Amino acid sequence: MDTLNKILEFAGLFFVLLGSIFLFLGALGIYRMPDLYNRLQAGTKASTLGAMSVVLGVGLMQPGWLIKLIVIILFIGISNPLSSHALARASHRSGIRPFFKKKIDDYEEEVES
Image 1 (cartoon, rainbow, N blue to C red):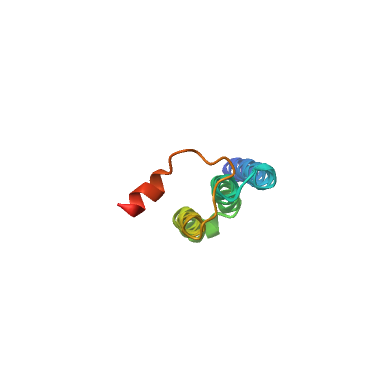
Image 2 (tube, rainbow, N blue to C red; image 1 turned 90 degrees about the vertical axis):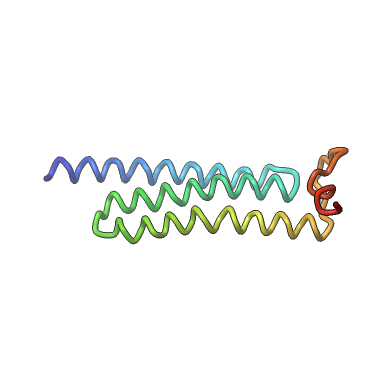
């Protein structure tokens, strides 16, 4: 059992480190991107994967918490993209335009029809 605990702890530390890297890259993307929509995309993708990896790593290091943490991972996987979509849609409806406005706005054409 001691070997299995060491393997789980190593895997947990790996996932915590991986999640921390993704969270850092998400923060960097929020800082570097030019407009709201790019920042929202960079932050959402990286923070979702980063948070899920950190929580999974903690679950591997503390196996007694694993079932509860899997529920949290599912909640993050559902709520984070939905909230990002709601923010992007509300921003578009309020008139915030992308930094590099392309000539065709597919969403606006869909809403008008």
